[in-house]
Length: 487
Image 1 (tube, helix red, strand yellow):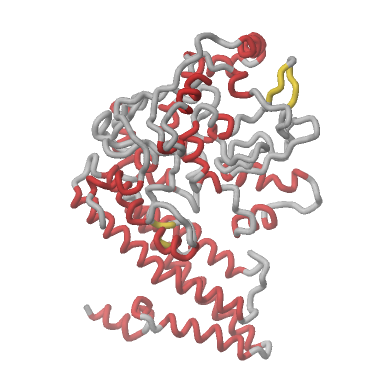
Image 2 (cartoon, rainbow, N blue to C red):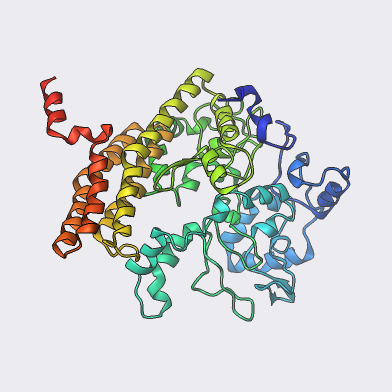
């Protein structure tokens, strides 16, 4: 690590932070006006000092009118709001749902112009810093998965094709409820049922903003204690391909959390690990929460130094070099995560953990991901599989290998769940690679040669033979097996 852990926060995170600052989940226009009075050189909202937002002096006439009906018609909604910080600060329905008449989803209701969706742009009228941070995160881009294998699976393999909305249920009721949909609006400003309701984290809102604050802060209570629990993330980070919740449950962190949940102090205003609680971290502890040296962030990407989602993992530094992206580099991001870890662990423990973690990801890339990619690319270049996704058996094998087993192995290593890393990760990777992917590729080569396409067959076999001679795959040879048996 290039920076000392005590300087990590200062190497890439901007903004001033007070560990005793209490952020109420409400705001008012006077509070926004005070921000505008800051010195002229302070122009970036992320550079502004954090301050407690002020409550309204009284409930607005518009919100009081809303409450009169909703108290009768939607008692559960009304009660949730009544328990919220918003209620305590006289922030009601109208303060959040008011709309500009020119908004695509604006409509007139009881004499007022409102919109059903409260987008991050709307929340940003008060929570400006949080909204800007979120818009810069990977979460905000979660809906950009069209064209991926996952999207093809939902829309083609799992859908019907008769032109009806019900044909797209696999996507509209599954994928986009986590990833987010592009919300469609009719001429009167009402939201169409094919895309609403939707609280996907990367939702494309009619006002042009991305995301849904309610994906984590469930409406209408918006409890910070609820958002800090791992169950909040488990709505989407669950199941094959993104099994972080299961991994957390089996990790030492998860075991300690569930055993000591009464000591987690989840309602603490500042919630500093090691200071306000020390039983265990949750997802938000590591990816979002403040420490004694760095502020809370709503950009969950800022402490991630590896991409563990793609078929072949890539460091943030490599990604930035390849794409020209700007921002904190991988070393700074890792230092920020390590700064969280040392709230409870020694620096040596953290340093050694990262060495083990890096080795696991590099092994996955070297032994399975890069060779698997070579095999699939050789088949495509030789014309032995089509350009359409998932119409060849080997494509399903490759998808399971990197998306299910590969992610289990990498995330298991990242989150200290050795059983997941081994049996749902490495075991499945080995099984899929050696007993399915390679044999299926050889079978396609054999079929090509039998059909008179020897050049294509030889091209694929050349790749397979080259992979087999690499040190990490020599165990398959008879000589290597015999030597191992003798020992």
